Image (cartoon, rainbow, N blue to C red; front, side, top):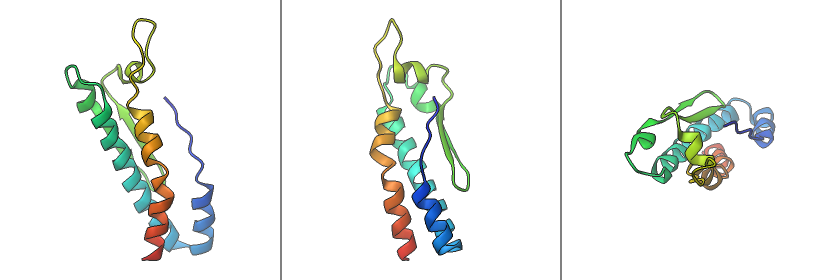
Length: 110
């Protein structure tokens, strides 16, 4: 699964505010990735709990990755011809990604 995100608003802020904006974007990215990861874990279907335990994340300066190492997390998310989709990642992303710009603005006010 590949997700592309437009952070042009953040890039403009980086130009305007310099280091303060970069620090705010890094903190907002970390917060947002953690929120999405936590909601993905809570929303993951539970039979054995293996997929929930396998959800991990990494955070870079202005990037983040959330992934499942269970080997079947993508099948749960999108379904197969034998099983309907049981999305847990997309709802977490939709719920929390808009908070990135809100959090960045909050960090810029400090």
